[in-house]
Length: 198
Image (cartoon, rainbow, N blue to C red; front, top):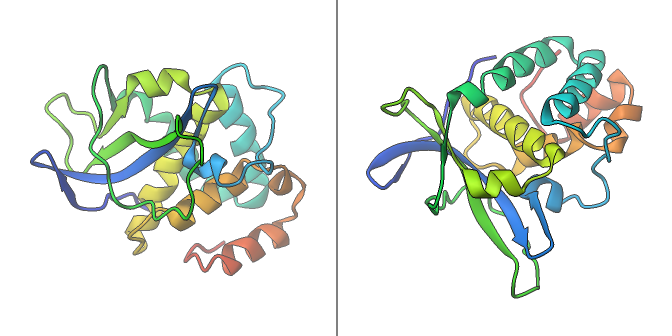
């Protein structure tokens, strides 16, 4: 598996896949988890994003060892490969194709992360809105990292939007996946029509 980004243009820079967050006055979560409210696991280890990711990868190793190894390696590079920006509003990347948003007037879907096609001057691949990042729980931060890893992978396999990446991400953080067998996991991958193989 290799990792590539989508080509788009924002503020004169070619950028890659984006990540969205749903922001409300009393809650914030990545779009992947908001769309699947109630299904996402409440992690006992939710003290740090690293502990949450460790639990997710431990379970993925049980279901798909090769995929777990490659995703874990890329996730471990995320913080060093990210430029955190304060007091900015990231350009919206029109790749989410989400079907619903909160009714509440004070809630909104905002861009929290952008992946550059080429690294920036500081040698960083990702740009993240630091204010929004700090509002996320450890589970939310872990979920955003995994979102970027999955979407990067799926684009290399021909994906042009984040719909299926979000579904896979939410599944990897769900109660269901921790109870599923290998056969159930690969049935999910097949039903989602993802070109990922054992």
